[in-house]
Length: 129
Image (cartoon, rainbow, N blue to C red; front, side):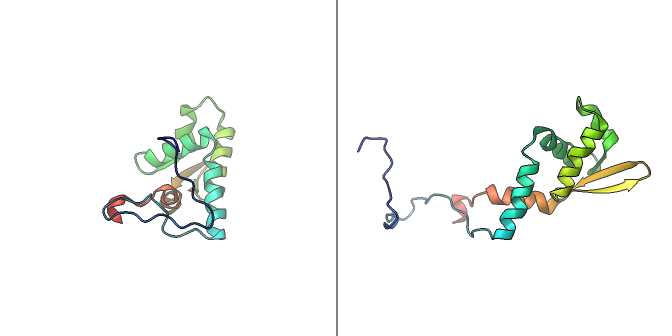
C-alpha cells in the first residue's frame, strides 16, 4: 500500500480499534426518518436556487426580522412577480411564513426550519464525544 492510500474496509469487517485519546471520525448521532428526509429535502431543494438562497438571507438579516417584497425587489435584477414566486417556493418549503398587510406581503424566516437544515449538516465536535 502506498503512503497516502486509505485502508479499505470491506462490508463484513469491523472498524479497527482506536487508541484512547485519538478522535474518531465525526458522525451523525441518529439517522433521520423518512418523514424528516422528505421535509429536509424540500428545504434544501428550495435553497438550491441562488436567488432563493439570497432572499432567505435578506429576510433573515432584515432589521426587524421580516421583510416586505417591496424591501427585496431592489436587491435583484428581477421583477416583483418573479421575487414573489421565489418567496412562495420558500414558503411552500416551510422556510418562511408570510402575512398580508394591505397590498403587501411580509415574510419572516421560520427559525425551527433553519435549525433543522443546519442541524443535519452540523456534525458533533470531537470535544463533545
